[in-house]
Image (tube, rainbow, N blue to C red):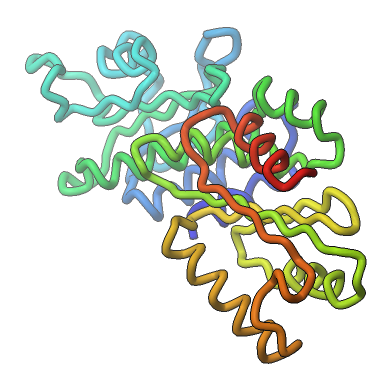
Length: 278
């Protein structure tokens, strides 16, 4: 649900805005991660702006020399007051500091949190915050990997390229599973109708890429092995009910898939297309 909402927030924004939809983002993060006082700052050429792009509650001016903030920026990772390697004498104003970095390593912003419920300073909540900030950074500020994919496959939708890069990054540590499915239809009318129906029946997070009239790729976030197996079973039941076919192959549609791992997205897309002879 959070990833769907993040996609909607950034759908009409562009790379020309450093932290697009910052107000909407911080309020969404407050809802999901129980933030009470927090601020988002733009970072340009390594320098943090003096004024926040968005803030929640009454925040004090940016504490540039804050040890927690410096730790987060130096390590390019979220930092919080309960980390074991943090100085026990820390008396700064922030409970959490999180850099906003895309998969290309570009630092586009930073979030600092002054107040949130004590019980919300836990691994699951802070991991969710980190995941959402990373996904946001990759979607709104595409890196070189996205440009490389669009150069290689000009018909690939930008949204698929940018989210593939983001989802490969989120795959680290097994946090978000994503599957790529590929359907290759023969020249029969029924096979073409089946591909059209599959493209119309996407779930809220799924995105479709028509490589040509007979080849359809669907990116399926939040879909691991068991979820993909369920999708295939539902598809075969639908084929039996609507067309009296027992399988996609019988209907003239070849089916290929792969579960994303942590390698570059372009390499994995190329492997899937090569396996299908596309």
